[in-house]
Image: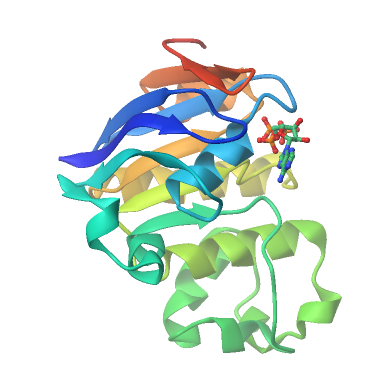
Length: 199
Ligand SMILES: Nc1ncnc2c1ncn2[C@@H]1O[C@H](COP(=O)(O)OP(=O)(O)OP(=O)(O)O)[C@@H](O)[C@H]1O
């Protein structure tokens, strides 16, 4: 059970295979431009691609795109915002306040205007928004790239808990140390191809 990617192929990806169990975290590393983001976006079916992709043995083709993306959640390094206030992007903003505080944001952050957000605040709030309904698969694209060490460790703590609660996680990182802290298995991307154990 979990996420299975078999033969994922697109204009930029070549026959990629990856299986991530529920409750497992796998890191994806590789040089800048190697295709890590392209891979995560393809798994989430955000760009044209082919292959046999399954969640708990249910093929992606059996679900409408939005349903697949609710379950197989791509969390971009830079989240998009479309409303003026942070809280408007959450289904139940108050419920996310304790987690917001845990990752170093103040309790009133849901009332903030999006326009005032720093890069690191945007990154943490985008992450919180994505995990609000606890998707079974998280595709995290450099989720702490804009954070100081304290905030980074706090976000890592939340990621570890999500994994322990049963999420299947693929995490792109440029940090070998973070890869070792968060995952027991590591794969590498080069030229749009996935290779096994790395860090
Ligand atoms: N729509 C597109 N059309 C053509 N080329 C693209 C498209 N999207 C991405 N690319 C190219 O594909 C390559 C892989 O991009 P990708 O964003 O996956 O890199 P990455 O491994 O995530 O890099 P980084 O570590 O810098 O974030 C890059 O050379 C990029 O310019």
